Image 1 (cartoon, rainbow, N blue to C red):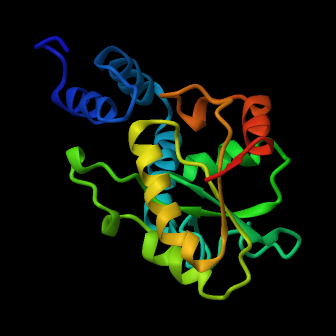
Image 2 (cartoon, helix red, strand yellow):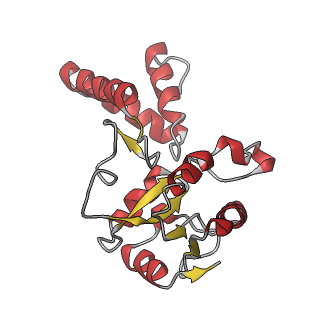
Image 3 (cartoon, rainbow, N blue to C red):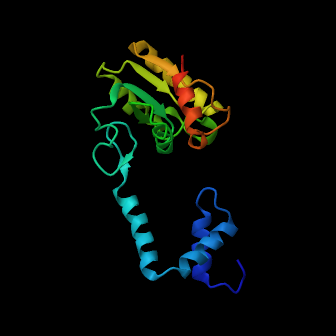
Length: 200
């Protein structure tokens, strides 16, 4: 920003620029927009951020984000709790739910194995997944990690851990583009990939 710009506005733009996908020009536009809003709107925005940060936590069952003890999916008795779709991030759950076709439940790993980035298996929610399988009620695990090198490696690692437990492990069909991200896939592509999943 220009040197003659008020420091609080510069700081606000820098905070917006820390968000994913937001460059400095967009950050500046957002900063100017927020300053132009009535104070009550800005307070409501700030309150929403703080409330989300303070109340959202991991579901004790699936590790998805929720503000309750269990997320709405885990507490839904009409869902098939014998099928678990394993995803990398909470936003992937949202992507699958948009299809309105998947009726099982989820498990969110909160990342993928990536030694180059310093992410090892013990840093993911794998222990919690294995704990869920101890009940013996789960009949299938769908590996729905992204079709990337790290996503594939994570799926293979989990498949090797889980196969001895007698649970069927399948992988999404590769109707999804290699290197793609689930969050950006359309509903039809996700539904076809889910329907055409393959055993691992």
